[in-house]
Length: 73
Image (cartoon, rainbow, N blue to C red):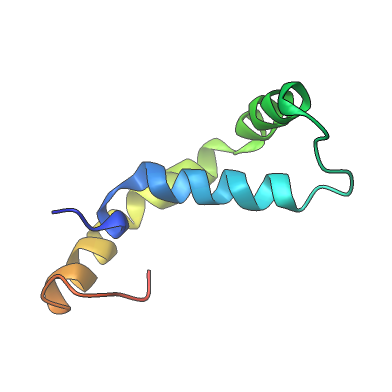
């Protein structure tokens, strides 16, 4: 029940983190960081979110097969 694999927002946060870290010029202060987060949040496409939703059946199956243990997702 507490598996991050079953919490879609955790995967969105991961995408957001990777996008911010991939920037050529990182944010220099909290205000730039907040602006960067808002910008990158807006850059996550509806298709990426739809793919995440569609992956939930596979994720649930993986967690069940792992008896609640670690999965590769």
